[in-house]
Each structure stands twice: as structure tokens, then as C-alpha cells.
Length: 452
Image (cartoon, rainbow, N blue to C red):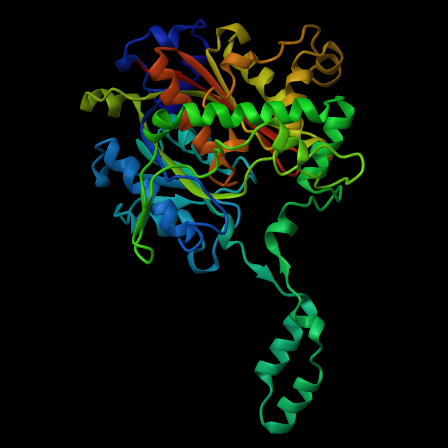
């Protein structure tokens, strides 16, 4: 049966068939065989000197090893990254070869801003479903420390004219055009976190949502504190996902996420000054995600490949949805993507055991919660009468989120899926949904089912 026929027949099956069918009957399904990630470390800290290529290679190599996947079996590598390094364009291709995967394995580096790692998984899963590949390594990587500083176009013209000058007089004339302001660079990270259409930084979009949804500072700080508490309680569980990173120059190993803080409390969070609106603002460094470095990778495979090797996968990718919305309210992306994904799969919200929503900002996640419970919002934006309801707090980001762990933008989407699958397995639970808001005005959600 060709891939198109397999997909058509799958769509005709009743809801629940995928979970009850034997592995041999699920050729159109996509298994997550294994996964791994590096620790997430604060930008300009312990991993600052580790290139994003090395972070990605470490995660990919470890994911393949944990799945006991013969390297020659890998057909494709997809690694999301937002700030690709100039020395390793098409990061996924260089990563694949550095990780010891075969030269015949094709590779691509998708860019969907904050959801780049999730987009890599979605693209890899489609390649498997379409019969174009049997084993795909998918994930994401980002070195926020490595995002370069940029010179202005005027500076570029000056340095170009200086380089082209031939002879003493010509070089002197070029040098006389130098002005000190030409040495004033712009940090590309700052530029990249500002939307070019609405003109708002990502933090300012969160301020907008906080005002519109009437989310007080105290509620945001309490949400942030809970993220740290959960991440600290889950240290041992999260360690299962992590491959340590060796730092030869320092003679030390980074083994754990650096972000979770045991010394924070509501009083300390309340003392932090607003970042974007000094007078009326509520968004602070304490209730925002950390800027971090890290990478994550998962091995995806067809059901027949898994069955032929007797492998018990972590779980199955069931589907994903991407939505678009106005850039100034990009934080509401998950509130649009999640209901559409559930509708597509025929799942009810109460049938989802665990949820992971990336914590770009506490206000952003809380705004998503309010939107999902709002009849006005779902009528206007989803054209339905009944809201799906807020995601249960005791099943949302149970191991903490990006406020505590950090948000290496290209990697976070893959980290969410990996964390979700591990926690489902630990709990003996079945279904999970991960979602992110996306700078520029998008949202993405991806659903998995645990194999256990």
C-alpha cells in the first residue's frame, strides 16, 4: 500500500484505533524511539564557549546511542535553529556528519522561531508517514550566547572600502571616513526579539496580554515561583533526559539545568523592576523565561522499523497543528493551536493526561489559560460555542517550564516533547500535548501518546 493510501485508510478509522491496534498495523504511525538533550545553561555562562554545532552534535549522537539505532539506519536529520552560525550553515547537515551519521542521510534546518525544534519533529514525522524515510533524527539547538553582534550598513561600507583600497593614499582617504559611531554594534539577539511589523519586543507583547487579560503582577510572580519549585522537585526526573557536556577548558562537566533557583521567593520576585514599562508594567526578569543555551534531539521511526527490531518506543507522534495570528498577540498562539489539534484528533481536553506549554512569560501562559476558558474568545477566534476550558494546573508543566529551565529558542519545542514523553511514561499515563507561542504571530501544538 502506498503512503497516500495508508493515510486515507487511517483517516477512515474510528477514534482510538491507533492506540488499540498492534504495532504491525500502524505503519502510518510515527514512533519516538529515544531522545536526549543537553543541560540548559544560562546564556553567557558555563556553556557560552560551546558552539551551537557542538551542542547539537552532542544531543543527536546521544539520542541515537540511547535508542541503540545503527547510525547507517538514519535516513534524515532535521535540526531547528533560529540563529544559525555562519561557520555551519545548514546546521543539521554539519551536525549529522559530525555525529557520525551516514553521508547519504539528507538534512535540513527549519526555522519557525520559538517552535523550530517542534517544527523539526513535525517535519520528520511527516517524512516517515509519507514513506520518504524510515528513521529520522529531529530536534533543535541554540546558543543564545553565540548570537553575534552586528555592525550597521555604514560600518560595513567603511570596512569594505578600507579592504578594497590599494596604495597608501587610497587607504588614507578610506581611514579619514572613519567615525567612532561605526564601532557601535547592535546585538542580533535584541534585534531578533523585536517584531519587525508591530514594532514590539516579545516582552512588550506579553505586557499587552497582561493588560488585556487583566493578569496582576502577583499572579505572574506566583506562577513563576511554582515553575522553579516544580523544576527543583523534578531534578532527578529531568536528569533522565540529559547528556552531560564536558568543558575541557574548565576541566568540568555541566550535568544539570542551571536555571531553577532554590533561593527565590515571592518577596524577591516582587522587588524586581518591570523591564518594559517602568511605571505600569508587570513583566520582569523573574516572571519571564531565561535566555539559555542548549539542544535536544529525538529519534523518530516508522512502526515497521520499530516492530522489526523489537523496540519499545517512548511513544507515538499523533499530529501537529500550526496557526497564525497577529504578531502583537503572538503569546496566544497555543490558545488557537490546541483546540484545533484536539478537534483534528478527536480528543477531548479531559482525555489529555499532561500538558506542556512553553513559558515564554508567566503572563503569556496565564493569558492562554484565560482564553481557553473564555466563551467570547472561542466564539470570535475559533468559531465554536463552548470553550475547552483552562488546562488543569496539576497537569500543566508538572516539571516546571522555561521560566525555571530557560528557553534556548531553537531547542525548546523539542525539549517540551521529550520531557512530556518521559513524564507520561513515569506516570503510566497515555496522552500528552505540547505547545508554544511563536514570535511573529504563530502557535504550534503537537500531540503524543505514550507507548507504555
